[in-house]
Length: 459
Image (cartoon, rainbow, N blue to C red; front, top):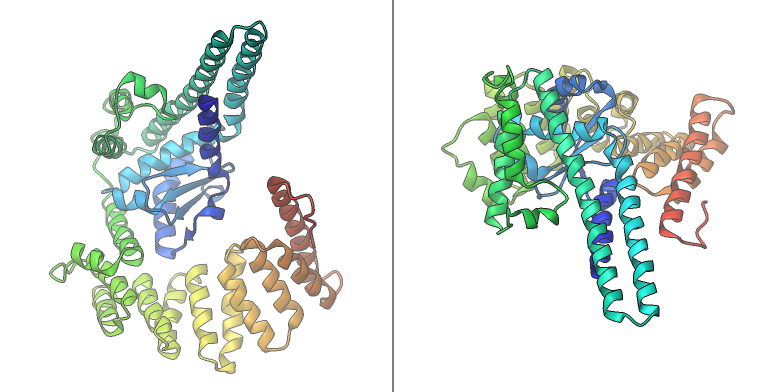
């Protein structure tokens, strides 16, 4: 039974991707999201999809991985960004994951499991028959062989899907006019990692893998990429410069400050290095150094909204909200009220505890959620504004928006009901409160069903 248990375990591991937010945290940053959107847009179009309908989501996880989990969303681990050296390597990964989306591979996992389960059930029945006539050793052999075949069937199915996504990704890179060199370079990193951890590259070892051997993938794709007209095309300099910025920013935000300051020493005065050190200093509560570094970045480009956002963030989170208003207001204006930056500005306005700022805060935050409703932080801040002016119904509605996104479905239902009772019947907000209540009930019922909690009831 161990082989069948392993098969089930592998399937469970594959299906963990269906609930990425439950186990991992999403990292949101305006500059990083703009970068990922920019480098993925030509690939999404090449795949026959609409860029506005595809989300590229960054997950706080140090492992080198990316996945899709149904729908049109690609999840990228922060460890993958850290491991990559070029924007083209990240594009190669995105192209591969788009291959999974267009191939409907998540939906088809059930096919592979059904086929494997059929083999297992038949082998168990045959083994039982042998056992009943006294052939115990033969029964065990039949069942073990059947479970081995079942595992092989499922893993072969998974490897076929991965190979299909590899070649689909190569097609999308080609159609977008992007060299496949970055894709091969990244597969080379995976191969080196496998060697470092002692993973065998033998055919026998390949039988137990969900993905084809990295060396085989490189060999298969090299022949495709080297014949492509885009193979010798130079890398996009703008994409590479932006990649180096967001990578350094991510490292400064996530890594231990000592490691960041080691990798980006004071002698390095490039924009990525300044970015990384500014966040490292901020993590260490070395406010003067963080602000000094932010000012060095602004000296290079006074109108860079992300440099302004950095300075405003350091000031705000260091207990100086009034001083943070000017750089955050400018960053908001320069980005046409980019939702994440506008949310931070709205928070700063509220943090001044000056009621005269609340009207502007409401305007800024409403614009933010109007462009990005999936922003629980902005909804929370908007609720603070409503509560401060005594608009309890809309404060509860804002709470319901926040709670449903945070998975607090019971609280969301109660908040939506309270909001509905205090809002004008038939108004847009009244209708929205009903929608949130129904959404929260549906999600709670699905959660209860998945957890098989018999005594769980919504509301």
